[in-house]
Image (tube, rainbow, N blue to C red; front, side, top):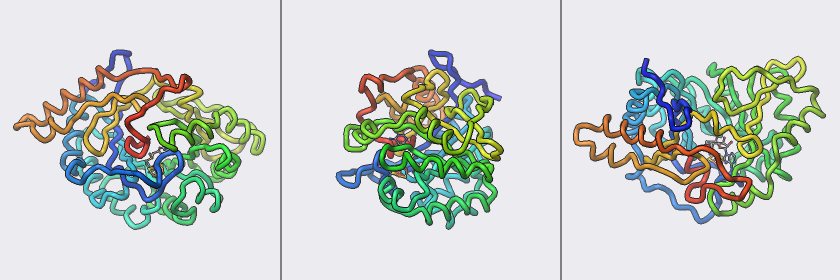
Length: 334
Ligand code: SAM
Ligand code: SF4
């Protein structure tokens, strides 16, 4: 097995998050504005074969974990082909996808047959009216049908992601956490991060809820949260168990408890840019290597990946109001 590449800060970088599209069927208030959007033109999107090439190059230098994200990855009509190609790369140990699950029921069996191992489903509340306010389109009935399809297809462990937004869904965290009592699911509560310069970034700053507050609310309603040992040091989630519960309650706290020191990831945007850190603007363009490799494409892509790892920043200055300005969350994939 290839040793995992290490950056300037001694972090082993072996997790590639691949954004497949900047389109989405929802418009979560902190992620994607309703108006004024421009999307990556079709011929600038990486195609399935180019995505496979990047994954091959990444695996050749020591990556072993891949997550497909977006935008909404299920909006790619060639998603099953992408999963099949990525899953077939020898050395991809873990292939998962982050999704709002609305389109999952129609494709889940093909995705599993193609090699998808796990999904994280984004659902901010179980309350139908609150969901309309925070995720704007779609419904809890549709998302729940997607969750059930993933469970029926045997994808495990199922993880649910909830972004906590003051005055929108902060009181609903208890109902989501309660799901872990009877189910072996992981329900994770995520702190808002500001990206870009539009209304989404303003929501992220004005409606921020620290994980400590979410934790206290759950504890007051459902009982003590027992900390669980951190089995994977790069897991960004701090995990707990409710009394007698089968599942896990997690808190992802990039703002109040940054985990930059254990970051192990690189991001690939849908238009082929290597985005070095979610909360910084630095990017390297992989497309010239992919499209003008002149017979040495794999080597050319590997060398951009290695350069990206060496330039990967650490730390952020969110507390000083400094954040990523050029990209928004629906372009980076979380
Ligand atoms: N559409 C899919 C989904 O919603 O899961 C995948 C892409 S979405 C950008 C990936 C994750 O980013 C979501 O699950 C959501 O939890 C998270 N997210 C989006 N905007 C965020 C923000 N401003 N702060 C924190 N997390 C955010
Ligand atoms: Fe779409 Fe996911 Fe962003 Fe919500 S968080 S708007 S579902 S990309």
